[in-house]
Length: 238
Image (cartoon, helix red, strand yellow):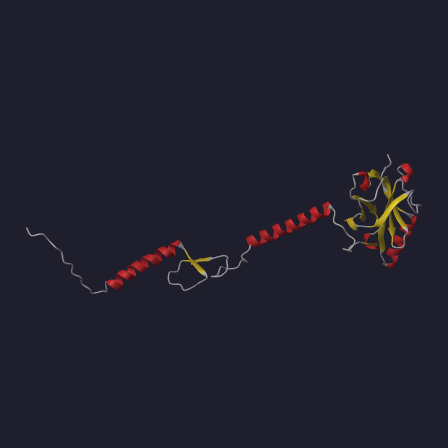
């Protein structure tokens, strides 16, 4: 059973891609158009130089490599809410010279007009297998690209994964700042009871020993060796 929806490189597109591979240059896919196929879903043909019935054309929103092993690229176009009033059945890609490089048939999708009360952005994507992705110039111009919901979610997930990874590595490492009198940080413990350090924290054992030493020192200070103390005791006469 033949595929109903597919994309093909046109004869002009194949010739330009082959020439780019030989010369080391790159082909610039810059625009995409969509059409209504005059009421039917057309079968893409490599001899095409245009759509059956083009209804809208604009610059690509993005052009990405989606499978480097199979040399598959994905071209994306975003249609604004004010454009519509027709059913999308076909799409095409054009290079910077305006040559039709590829054509595709797509599932029927009605694009409403904003005036119809259901205006919306519509994303159209074409996946295309080329002879070599090295011969295709990818779009990286931030002045053109708009972020789709999928892009935002992916960026958010990537950022979260990176943050989790960095926090995990940091938590397992010993590369942490020490606490100071002015800044929070990790504290190193010490059992010493005669330290003058302002960077170490005394353990409970050190505190207990320090208190005992202080009590003993106070008693010895008050009772030097060789001191004899007499205590008077008042007694009732018998």
